[in-house]
Length: 474
Image (cartoon, rainbow, N blue to C red; front, side, top):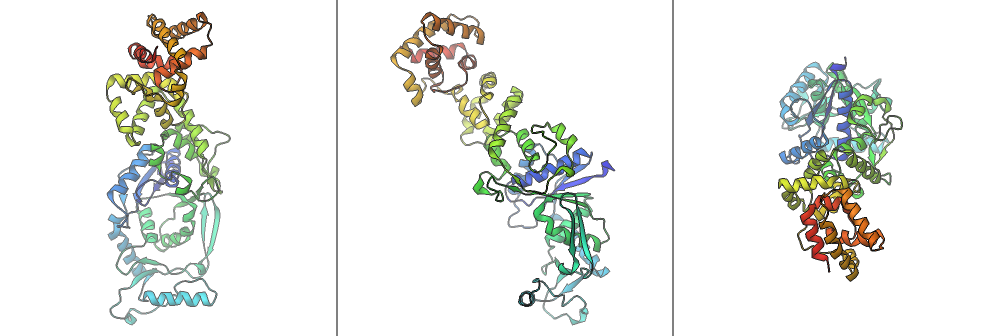
């Protein structure tokens, strides 16, 4: 049975992968992987005005960056319109759907009357049992579901529990519009059936659709997939996550310097948990994931928590792998092109790789790492920031003159010999180490703060380091 599980991620192409959609995709992906099944990708692109290829590409790019691969080729919902109409024709023949000739104005009047009488505003079933011979001329009908009027529809949700909706509250909703285009409600059901979807995992905002979609499955004699409606993501203030809280698209987090593995880990913990585990490998997430541990309450997005988690992953990631992530970030960051061009030189890329152990210990994002690393590609003579200017007094420049000679004599350009030489000089001159290290840092980086000075010396190499010190020495 495990091999038969099929989930799907079915976004509307809006130009980016919303972070809530990314979490939905992740849950579908983890559930499928946990059971040895498949996750399919369906682009719900029936809104032709919004569904550009550029928007579709942006969605797929976001999924790929997060490492959420799908099985088979992406399926376009729009390309299946003929199949949707075919199903409606079968429903008309079977008597589970009917043609409705009520005009939009008549339907509006029905709803207004229902409101005035204290009833739910909906279509009143005027054409439900009328003979086709009564059809008026010149009106293209819509096709409506002939919904059951008695009993109840039950959704046994894997997260929300048993949801019961009286059928009297579900009207004969439209399946096919008067122009022949299918409604979202119909298209989703037909596609899920034809794709063999066994589990529908989506946001709880779709729970209101579940009963109506169940009616369509039942009307066609199809098995209803198991459903799981997961909680929404809220901002720190408890309101639904929106642009005012900050970045809402996956691609924005890439440009903000977050690693995909950190995003996966963080998104997995939004609404799902495994004991007290905070940091989980991808293998652990796949092994542990289950809908039974998904909560019903909305999850709050904590940007500080994500930042701290990202810092952990940066420190834990192999330097060569982190360098590749750094390049991906630079390709999408403002002003990243110049740094990426600098890195295209093999010697410079090696310099960056050499600097990474010191850089990643102090950075929580690739933005911070890039800022700290900027000394690597700055051209001599360096333009000093305000802190560096204050540090580089006449006395400090005299110290740099001495250090230039001291460090020139270090044969083995490694951390321990360099540190020993600097400390020996400080002791010989009866200076606190900070009085020596601060001018050295300012001379090497042009800034008052930087990675450890020995890391900087090694990353820059002997020639560049001594040249920068000489530039600032008295």
